[in-house]
Amino acid sequence: MDRAQASRRRLLEAAATEFAEHGLAGARVDRISAAAQVSKAQLYSYHASKQELFDEVLRQLVDEIVDTVPLTADGVADYAARLYDAYVRSPHLLRLAAWARLERSPTGPLFSPASSAPKVAVIAEGQRNGVLDASLPAADAYDILVGLAMTWAPTSVTYTASGDDPVADHERRRASLATAVQRLFAPR
Image (cartoon, rainbow, N blue to C red):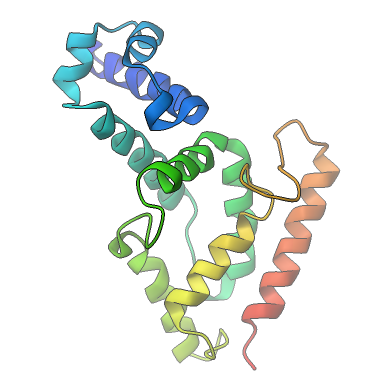
């Protein structure tokens, strides 16, 4: 990794931490550049604005999850459990998404529908093949699946999971989630 790439990586990591903690409005470019050990001028050479930097950080974290958690029609329960694991490993993502929802997009889709289109297509194909319940529109089924995986997310009103929770608690949650998803999505 060359110096410019290392600077960009540090910048995105520092920005993720700052935005997750303070949101877009409360984040300070001075703190981000200091934590990343890059000048403000260098920060602005990579990103034209604080909003653009926020969007890039959120996009990269979402892409990481999408790329590392594949979905198959016969594996929706496993997908939900792996999403749960990814959310526990990356609490910044859900905090950033919550800030984006509060500060940028209070209604409607948070991300472009095109970003979830491949996963929705997997569900639709599973419905056509009789592997998944076809009583829900595929896009709604995908939204419900993601929502279930976020049951113990930082925005939960009941309980927020942490990587520090006992392993047995994570295992119980994964099993409960997989059971709920299996029952919900099983063909009728």
